[in-house]
Each structure stands twice: as C-alpha cells, then as structure tokens.
Length: 439
Image (tube, rainbow, N blue to C red; front, side, top):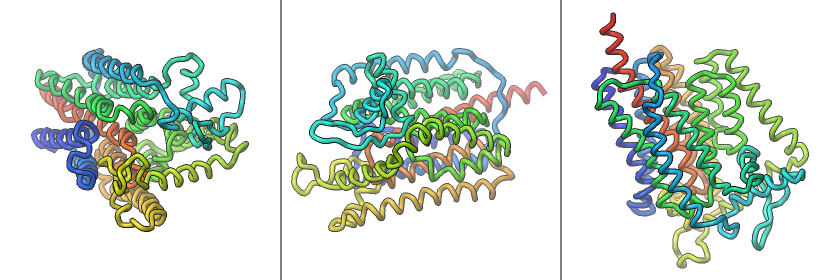
C-alpha cells in the first residue's frame, strides 16, 4: 500500500471508529430504536473491513527498534487520570445496590465465601429472591481483593482496562517514535479518541456503567490480542484462559485463533499456549468447582434463557405496548427478531441463538479460508485484528440481550486497531524513510 493510500486508509478507519464511539455514547439510539442498531452494526463492520483490506495491501510491519520512553505514556497517563477521576465521582455518587442489578452480587458473594473458606458457588441471596451463581472464576476471582481490603469493587474493571490500555500504548506506540510534529499531534488525537469511548459511555450510561463490570473481560481480550500479535506462548495461554473463564464470547472463534497461532508462530507455540490455557482452566475451574458441582454449566444456560425471556418482555414500569427496554437501546438485532416473533417469543429467542452460533462459527471458518487464500501477501497483524473485530461484531449484535455495556468489548478491539493503525502508517512510515536515507 503506497504511503498516501495508507494514510487515507487510516483516516477512513478513524471516521468509522468515531461513528461507532458516538453511537455507543453521546448519540446512542440517535436514529430511533430500529435504525440505530443498523448504523452501529454497519460502522463496526466497516472497521473490520478496513482492517481486512489492510491485511492484503499494507506491507508487513517493520521490527521497530526505537524506544521513546514516556513520549506517549505521558499524555496517556493524563487522560487516564481524568478517566479515573470521572469514575470516582460516579462510584461515590451511587453506592452498589443489589435491588438494581445482580451483577455485583454474583462476584462479591463468591469472593466473600472463598475468603471464609466456603464453597463459592452457593446460591446468591438477593432482595426478594435467590439465584444460581453462574459467573465463571475469572469474572469474580479478581474481586477477592476489594472484598478483603474493603474498597469499592467497581475500581477492579476500570483499573484492569486502564492497565490494558497503558500496556497497549507502551507496546504499540511508545516504541514507535514519530519525527514529524503532525505525526505527534496525530498520536495524541488517537489517544484522546481511544479514551473518549469509555468516557462517553460513562456519561451516557451512568446507571449501566456503575452496575456492570464489562471492562474486566474487555481488558482480558485486549491483552489476548497483544500476545497473539507478539507470539508469546505463555501470554497467549494465560490470557486465553482468562477470556474463557470470564465470558464464553470467544469460544466459537477458537478454531481461527488456533489456526492463526499454528500458522504464524508454529507448532511449538501452539502446543504450549493450548496446554497453558488447559492447565489454567483445570486448576481454576474444573478441579476446584465444576467437579464438585457439575450443574454450574447448566445453571448458566438456565439463567441466560430465563433472563432473555424476561428482557424480551415489556417491563412493568414501562408504558403498555412499549418495546422491551433492553432491546430498544439502539444495539443488536434482537429488536428485529422480537418483531418477527411477536406472538412466539421463545421461538424467536431460540432462532436468534441458533443464528448467533451459526454466523459466529461461520466468521471463524471464513477467517481460516481468508488466511490461507491470501497467505502469500498477508499482513498477519491485520488479519488477526480484522478477524477479531468481525467476529465480535457478529457475536454481540446477534446476542439475545444486547445490553449496552456488552459492546465495550468490541469497541475496545477498535481502540487497539486505532493505536496499531497509527503506529503502522505514521511511525513505521517515517522509520522506512529514515532507513532508505541511510542506505
């Protein structure tokens, strides 16, 4: 890809990313409850398309040796401090209330039980009812720290995401030093845009944000992507284990992940990564918990089905005849499927689940095909980024309950893509010029 063409490619990706960020924040449901999910999903698909386009035409990245210390970490740190300060005010103004959501009850209860030496997967007591605890270990184990030390547990996902962002900045930007002032300014703008999405979500979904922890699995996925890009078998194994032990989101994408690691980094890295993830799953879930209570997995499915049936119904506090609240927030295809199955809700839920599984797996198989078909000239960094973005776009847009906070995961992938795109197009472009001048 010629340098001018590469710059236009990156500009286009930034436009699509900004549209996605705005529709997750300040302008969610801007176009109405039916058109907004289409626009949001289209913006996400176009981001994936730009990455896959780059995988075929952007030259393989240089092994940059520049080390610029705190050059990008300084502005990133300032932005992170502002984000943390904003999060503090949201936490302080609204304590955790189990009557509003069962999310933190399902992570704090097992953490407390574990510290007391009891079996963590006991039923969770909530105001007026009890429920099965269906969160996997890496979704609640990090909350042992705030339970033991007595600080607000909502800091855990925010700090985890911040740390993942800082590591991304360090690995992708801080080691690629631009020389031109315009490139420096561009890097700062990319950092601001990357932070803006979480800040905008905090502002516009305060109730959802302070009741959820989706930034924690988002941090896991960010780190998994970084280790897949670097080829570290230990990093891939641990982060893949964290992802599989937090959400099931990545399960259907495992065929491509396995293929990618085997083809790019070799058989040894693949075997070591797979063994590390398997040992982690056995040690943290199967042996201590699943063998003792095999019903954990069936309880997860039961909760998911009952939750979907409830969220596909108009809530008691809504006006009669209004569309279900969570389906009308401007995200996902569930609102359209619900309209098609107006008089057979459970059938609609079943068919949407089947469609989600089918198309998510189809994306994984398509990415294997694309990798093999373009193997001779492929930029393997961007085939990974484009594939992950495409998969999460399909997976989350076809989810049964399109909670707004779930989409923090795919937009976090967009953030990694923005930082990587800037480094490849501007920092590495200048490095290639310097190399050419020295020859």
